[in-house]
Image 1 (cartoon, helix red, strand yellow):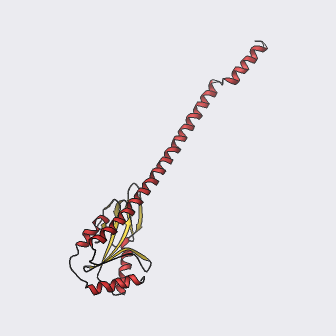
Image 2 (cartoon, one colour):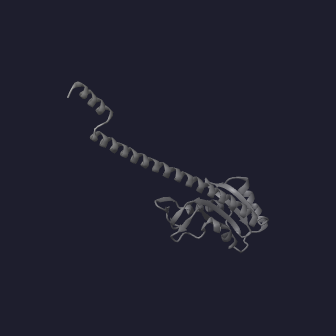
Image 3 (cartoon, one colour):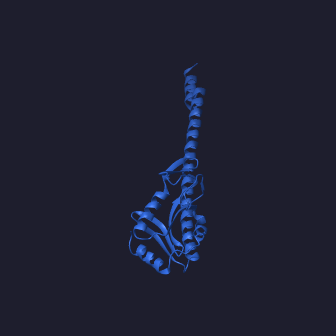
Length: 210
């Protein structure tokens, strides 16, 4: 083989890699594509979760707004509706004062199966994963105790859940889905407060935080 042929072979080798190099290169390309697909899938999942979370928050906020409007419409002229009352650091989203009593409503945003009893400190929400949250009746009991110190005693305590929930245990009376709120309030039929008492309770709650 003369020098010219050697030079030609070297040029060809430099331009066209060997079979081994081609195999290695192909494997690296395939590996890079797999990594990229995994990364893009994770990004897609994160975006999907973010969009779902935003939608759920939007739906929850809209449902709260609808609930307030429904309370105002259903009980207009029958009592008083107060919002976001701070009672010793515990927030009652709504307090509805009617002749049938004082309805103290706290709201809780969850989706999934709910497990909990009155005496448990933690309740559990289970979907694909399980997580715990503080028993809402601890907060409600503290609110009820503070109200009674102010001689506001004829109270109906309500833990209203916003979201797609299913109660799997014997939860306390007054633990409801927020869609059932109006029916629950209307189920209390007996008048236990006078107009004067209702106005007095409103003034106590409206003029200052307890």
